[in-house]
Length: 623
Image 1 (spheres, rainbow, N blue to C red):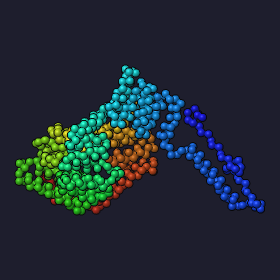
Image 2: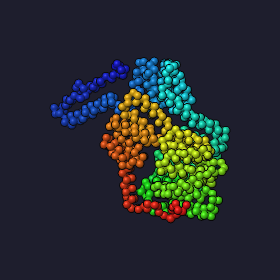
Image 3: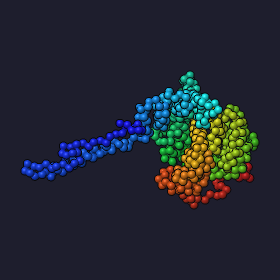
Image 4: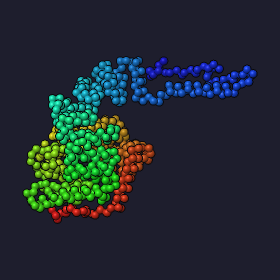
């Protein structure tokens, strides 16, 4: 029997009739013994049996009606299938089923239902647009692009004066971009690897392509093939270590990653990035002291590895030892003093003929010391003067990101990287951008410059410029996984932001007071480091709907990233006022209060002189 909605109406189950009355819940008459006495034990036993039967029937009926374990998506799919049995030629039902399977992640069934919908309504553009979404998510980019283009053709055929929707145009643009950046390149790398089956370079490039596609495990397997083809290929070792460092979930066996990185370190003992990846693995496992030792070994391998100073400073700050004068701090200071002393001696002995190396090293020491101590660079104007002097073009072919020859030619373009970082740390982002852009124009083949240019654009929220710069870095250094992973990260953020921006504009035209539209756009802006924009939309969402605890929490994240810790704490507290069970606000509030506590304790224990301390500090009179 079916109701108006098409859903089956289940009849109320009849109660089972018993042998001692009208139904099994009726009171049973006691049986008498032969002597006319009633057995109390028999009566009690039979009463318990009757209760058990009644409870069993009630439980069965409850399970039959409520079905608490069925997921809402599955329930909706079942209801639509019931409707489809009554109207098997309704394209709207097929389309709705396709949408539900798409939400559930069953792309094959989603494609099936959208194609069946199209068979009944071949002139409906939205069906082709949704099919394009499914095909692109399946990795079939060319088919997806064809579906998008056909949807736009149908749209124009229906009304030549009507321009395609912003959503359709954006979908097509992003699909073409993704195909060019990712899938077309992977197809090319796969063909190259088939032609050069013993080439470590081909395997490295193919593994980078898989990483760009988000297939970390497959990329790792391909990097291992590169290492097998050429055990002395540095990129293979670095890429294997980097692929392991991307698994921060803890789901995979850390022993395998540790063994791979240790083997690579044996082969390339003087490569600092291998020690850094080893330290990241240990830090993720909570082994902070061993992680610190790995970062220190990276400095032993290369005293000019600025990333190692950064990681050491961040780790020590997180554990409350940022200003402690312990063995680790003394070891770092000894490395910096040695580097500075050698640079001064070379500069004093050779004068201008000593080249840019000593000048670069003197500036580098000040910046590295500031990064390690987690404070501003002392005498920044003097450091900038040194870097301007060192910022000359290096002869020869520009190296890649991790090319060993990078160290021999470092002063030429690394000075530009340091100078841009110095400006950015002082809040002079426009000047920093000009410095790095000029350097990359002078050295267009230097992957490191394009990588830094992309990183700087990403930090400033210029997500489209970041994608372009990272793409150039991959073209200049096709074997380096770091650049490919950064390109993937930037593109994913770019795609999410563009999509949410279009949805926001469409929704706002319909309902200008939609708080969730502002909230979703704020989340997308936050993911691409557009902190100002994110803060504006989180605030607006909260104004429109004061019950949005997540919007208050988002305001806290945006304020915290901008360095407004007191205001961020107030935002997290407001989020908890709205929803005391908000887990993200609880964690964030604990973290920000712990940070304030550690900073206060460290300030009371350690007195830091205003103009720096320690031997080897240069001042402007010494330059």
